[in-house]
Amino acid sequence: MTPEHDAPQDAAARRAIPPVVCYPTETLPQPDLHALRAARAGWTRTATVPVPPREARCFEVPAGHFFRIISVEGPQVGDLNLWSADLSERFYSGKTRALHGTHLTTGDRLWSNFPTLRPMATITDDTLDWYGFDEHGGGVHDVIGTRCDPYTHNLLSGGGQYHHCCHSNLTRALAEARHLPLAEAEGHIHDVLNVFMCTGFLRGTGQYFMKASPVRPGDHLEFFAELDLLGALSACPGGDCGGEHSSDAAACHPLRVETFRPAARPDGWQLPAPRSYDRSHGT
Ligand SMILES: [Zn+2]
Image (cartoon, rainbow, N blue to C red; front, side, top):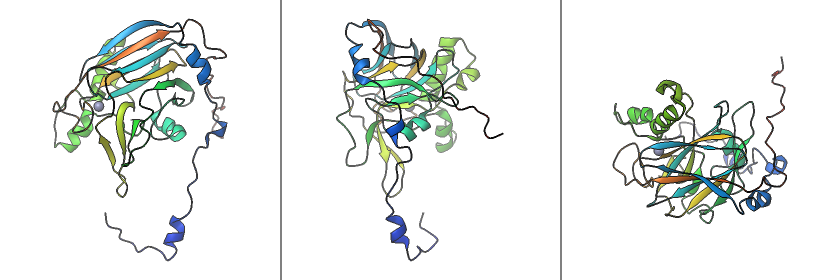
């Protein structure tokens, strides 16, 4: 909206203050990418999980194993949820964004919620790492969108009912995988990593935008599991997310998840410890 207040005389000086990175990463423990990647030699594929269009599927990955999300058939975005295998920890998209930025790539990690705040998975390969940021400010694999969901769709469409948003797909998949009532499963669904999605914020208005994903069949995003994980991946009803989502209008394609067991534990790797904050909160 148009500002209702005049800018102060020193507005230019205030705006010219250089930005400070909120979370400098010099003290952030770094993964040993070389050791993790070396562990891929001689690995064995342990599972292949097809994810049909406008549906989600769950998959399990033991700590120390790898998984890949693979583009098959056509450009397609995937919405990823991650939990510890016992569902006590979940992926914390917001803090991951604060630590690594709006879009993730090789070397970045998916962090868990409080109080553990530990890496759940480390990205070990990204065939779209060449994309970087385009002229519109768009990048790939964001942690800024939340997930398409039937509530926002209902709000913006004047009461519409659509049942194949990623939120609902993930809910059904988790309910089925863990034999949970729908409402209980829904409570575990959280903000996602938008795999292969191309997004950014419009300069000027700050609005969240998406554009057709640059992903092509054969591309993949690869993760090393730092904990025993349960994952859920939804093949978004938006397809490549170049048009609309929350409907059956877009061309949609399947995705595939593959899991791998390395021949040996990566050199020097151990289960990440939970944070040691004492949780007294000053009392
Ligand atoms: Zn979606």
